Length: 143
Image (cartoon, rainbow, N blue to C red; front, side, top):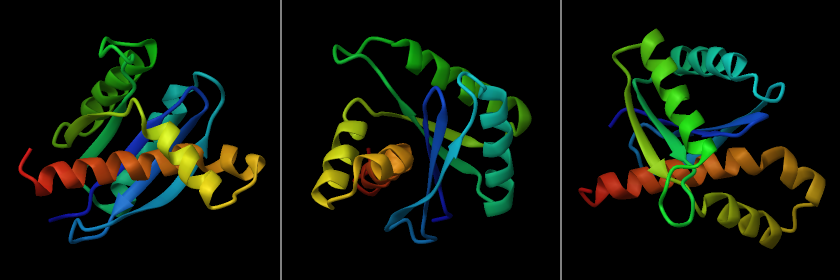
């Protein structure tokens, strides 16, 4: 399995995670900050990371509402996906339901006794790790 990148897109940051070459583990790569709604900057940075890491498979978190309907954030994530594909049409991009990843990432960081200020700086990156781990687990289980 080739390495895979996971993205958690927020309104001001892009959490980035990457898998190992065997697809067994994921680790945080970066929490990229950008001006609110500056998605073009986030897309350009994502393309840089994709090329630098030489990956062709991406996982993007899809922030659905708790009832499963589309949220504004999920619509933005879909646009982000479409923009990446316009630039690199050969990418394989999967959208993963991330309704609870931020909550789980926050709980993990709390249990690790990370201060609130530090949690805020890395929460999207940790969410990206969880999104990527979810994808790898689904792939391993044939889903």
